[in-house]
Image (cartoon, rainbow, N blue to C red):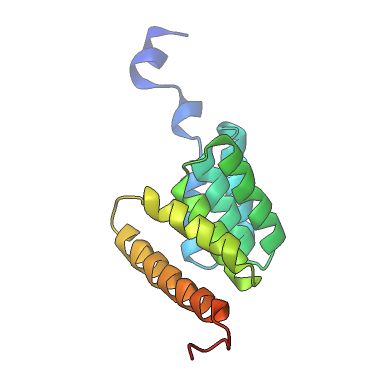
Length: 149
């Protein structure tokens, strides 16, 4: 590599597409299939990246491929058990599927080490409210007549 390329970067490096950022933009625009393609390309640049994989799972969820989304979240958790985003996503997939105990387990795991940042507090509040609601439902189901009396 020449000194000029070391100092200023090569043309190829500056022309590279940031597929992850592209995918995020497409996801925000509601172009879920296109976002999925971009995230898959980002994954080629960074194999096994849990952040990219979680975005892939979000795209799968948005296009209705919930089983693929769940598999992707479980893959993330296998390699990074404390990935809060994967716990959050999986919890709501389980909740929609009526698997309340699994949903509760993942909501608790999410809340044990919640993410930081701008919209994180919204997700934390949603997870807490959902968990409280689930616990209330489970408590009522455990009572002899099913409704507290």
